[in-house]
Length: 262
Picture 1 (cartoon, rainbow, N blue to C red):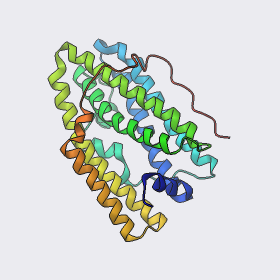
Picture 2: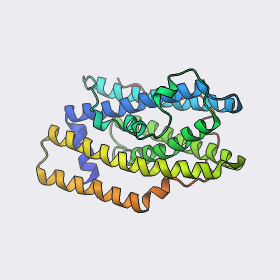
Picture 3: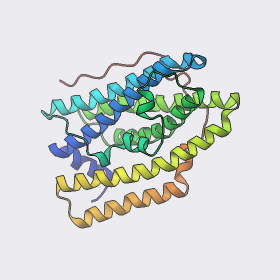
């Protein structure tokens, strides 16, 4: 039976597909950690109170990268080079979404507009991350290793999403509402297209590793295109709405420690 649970299980059971899965995840999280660290260092004086939260966001992302690498290490595997076409974070940057690495590599302070752009980009991508981790948490709640890792990462992603809602609403109260909505819409429409392309690329690589028959690949590709069609029509709207989060000041404390995988 072709189901999301069975597909994930198939990927996790085979060493090479698991290796690629964790390598892609670890790379994306590590990139996010670096980006948030640089943003925290370059926050303008008017928003210095945000710097510890942005740094916490980056520390969480770094931790997630270490978790995926630890899962690889426990199985005696080394990370593999991430194929360019599966690099979600860098492909978003190439589409002009978020703050460019070139800008973050300089020592020039960011503007308030840059911080809004960062928060809007994060609100969209953290929505995706939160949904994905909720799915994995549902499927692997009883897995001896993945359950702990997925639960911690899922909780962190939910906190990141709450933080983005709260801070964007704060900026909206100071008159930036129209700018925020415009950037959110632009980010969301680009993200769903990049997510489709990355999903197809990952599926292609997994299919070759696991020797999936053409019929199975065709069905999966059709499903990915179907999700994109829905998101392009109406699904993107869930990524641009803003509401006061249930948990306030979600990134107000220190980052939690990654679990040990003996």
